[in-house]
Length: 390
Length: 164
View 1 (spheres, rainbow over the protein chains, first blue to last red):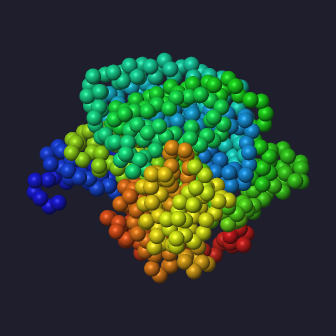
View 2: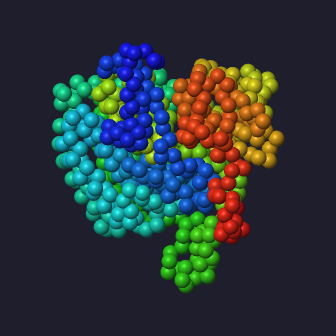
View 3: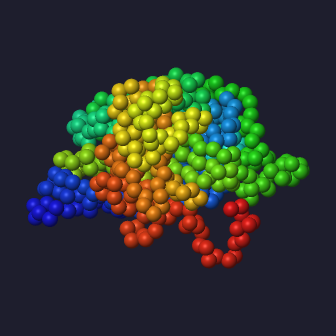
């Protein structure tokens, strides 16, 4: 569009309002958006190609660099995909521990997304409130696996170590404390007239269009489709628990905000349920080909030493097969399409990255709106650059 | 909905073009000829008794030892009773052209661009088929198997000691 009436504006790649590295070239008529062209791929790291060479356990570290706001979900989703290929059935304790960790990750993901919607609409305070709470979850990760952001938590077959009493105490503390802060945060924004005026009817998408675009997760549910992988194809014993799937009706920024708010409350309930009923048993299952033996056994037992060596050197092939496994990640259906030819590394691994699929709907959602609303729409979709580019 | 119902429906609609049906995998897997792929996906989406309205993923795959080396894999999902289906079609390396499904699924736009970017598969009728994640001046398709991950001129690392 070379018409002189229109202004071209670069939003990104590095701009504070994009919250990640991706570019939007906007064509503006005054403040109205006529069209936008998106450029992505600034932090593409070729994970799918790298994965074709790495042994299965080393791919976990690739997955947590995708959605780095909720990396444990990616890690555990990948481990469950491999377990599906191997035909391994995990114990109830492993399942419940996984639910606890994944729901903690979901809470941090939603906290960031929703507080950033606040920031972009001019309310910085709420962001500071909840960011402190995210730190507490990171402390739990630290106790559990030693890392904070790129967690590499869990192993194929379970966890590398059990929940210590300190971890359990920390989680209970978090469960007791977050509701107080989160209620304050909710009071600041949820029925705030200014916030509602800024978000209601901003960047809406209909249920039909959202399904057509391949939306999933909170963004799809905000449009009114009650699709949640945790319920439709329960993995990791999610069917043992009773929780509500919040659904919106307009598919606008306010609905996306509300759906995420309610999901945090539901996750809190889920974590408490799982932690109260944490079954006894082993925190890993017997898959010697993939689960590293305890270090003291490696030094004293022949068999453990052999397995340790074979795993570390990546000499163990997975069975021939082809599977698709998906989990409900912070942003929607995170899928793993895994083809194995019996080798040490996957023959083909494709990540279904929810961000990548729904972000392409942005031009349609912001067209005709004003620039400041486009920023809000973008932040309410929760586009994570790492997941977008893969 | 069970697999036999779907395969029965597809077989009665498409007398030729369905190359193989596998019900043993984690989901119903159908390999079809590229001539019918678009009609078949439209049929799966729009037929009232089938209704696979959600395109979960679309990706490429490369088997250098096959006659038709390049493949496109579609995963579709029916929400109402949580049925999934996997459809594959294979194309020759010399002329990897397949009809686009962007007219049926808006979400296929970037998925097809990604597949083109990494495998060089050309989607006929795509509104904007250009590279998406790689740089525009890249002159090869990096996910094809002939491109090794590591620099092939390296001499300090012996592949025999590192599996593949």
